[in-house]
Each structure stands twice: as structure tokens, then as C-alpha cells.
Image (cartoon, rainbow, N blue to C red; front, side, top):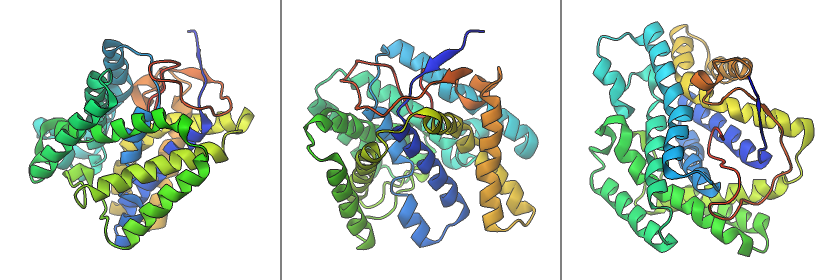
Length: 335
């Protein structure tokens, strides 16, 4: 089998890793301070990153590859976890997604919503950016008006369509970045404004799984500011990462999707066994990540991790390629 060599931006991989850790934190501790610190950005940042990273894939090829990297592991782990913990007494419920899924699968909603958002955003990406914003704003407005039922749409397609606005925000940052003279300073200012909005109570946390987009408009803007601010700051701070450190970070990032899919099941088992919160957090985070690191080198890598078995050759971080130019690099995996 021929191995593919993948060049990755270590700063983007660091952001993915941090966001995945924040997702697990949010599923272990439910206190208001934790929700305020994580829920506004830890999921939206993946949508923003998918727009920020340039892709040369055509629409059909994008759908095929995202189907492989997202939906194949989704189905594989759905079957595995259901067989071990849930059962198949109500298969339609398992396929419904989102708020309809059992507790052990409560992170699975993200996968189909993410897939829908990527595909929908790709369908409009050749339009002028202003038209993309208009369409995305319309989809988000529809979500606000139907907030009580949006999470009930099968496979979380409704939430995914509303999240196109985050993808468009990522594209906008990519197009504007060359005109930002001091990225780290600008990013820090964006984070400071976001913190002020959250601490003051002007911006409430989002809970996208349930179709809750927080304080109308303000929470979505805050999520964009945090995501964009982190991209700018971390991109500047980690611009020189290369070599073994970069390789290790890249491999951790490649394994992160499996952590997203499996950590809820591990947390369920830990809670049933009476394990303390910190112990549950450690096992749910480290266990799946270590297993994924091993699976990355096996034929099961694509089915369980969403990544074809390959060698990773990191390089120093770089600015995103102009729209439609350069290697296709999307959240979780790159093909």
C-alpha cells in the first residue's frame, strides 16, 4: 500500500486539539462557568476552520471525500457503540441524529451537521462573498425563527444549514488576512471583546446540538470573534513549529475525530462505574486518543478515524492559500 505524505499547518492542528479538549470538558462539567468558557466557541470553530482553509476540490469530489472522512467513521462508531451499549431496538432513533440520540452517542449530532454545512457552503462558494453572507444570514434567521424544532430535523441538517454562517465567516477571514497588519494584536483584541461580551452577560453560550444559537446575533458574532481571534493569535505564535513537534501535533490532530465520536460513550461507562469527574475526563480524553494513534497506522484508519493510513510530514505554518488554490485542507482530516 502506498502511503501518502500530508503537509499540515501545525497552528491549525493545535486549535483543533484545544477545541476537542474543550468539547470533552463541556461534557464532563456542566457548571455555568464551564459553559460560558467553552460552549460559545468549541464547536463553531470547526465550521470557521472549514471555511478558512482553502480547497481545490470540485463539488462532487468534496462530497465524496467528506463522506469518507466524516460519514464513514460516523456509521462505524454508531454501529460499534450501539452494539455494545445501546442496542438496535429503535434503529430509526439511532439514525435521526442530534437531540434524538441516546446519551452515549450525544456527540454524534455534530458529524452530520458538519457534513451538511460543508456541502451547503461548497454549493455557494463561487458566489460573491456578499451573496454568501446574505444566504447564510437567511439560513441563520430561519433557525432563530424555528428554534424549537430545528434540532428535531433528521440528521441535524437544520443545524448544519444554520452553521453555514460560520463557514462563510472563515472564508471572510481568509480573504481579509493579507490586509491585517498585526494579526496577533488584532486577534488578541477580538478575544478581549469576546470575553467582555461573555462576562457582561451580553452574549450567552450556544448549544448547537439543541438548535440554541444563544443571544440572537450577539452569540454568533462572539463565536466568530473567538474563532477568528484564536486563528490569528495561534497562527502567529506557532508559525515556526516544524520537525518532530510539528509531526506529533499533526498526528494528535488527525486522531481527534475519533475522540469526538467516542468520548461520550466512555464518559457514560465511567459515570456508571462511579468514577470521579477528573478520572472520567482523563480516561475519555486519553483513552480514545491513544487508541486512535495506533489505528492511524492500520487499514482501519479511514473507517474509524476518518483518515487514510499515511505518513505525516509537517512543515512550518503558512498563510492560507488564495481561494481555490493549494492543497485541500479541511477540519479533522485532509485528503
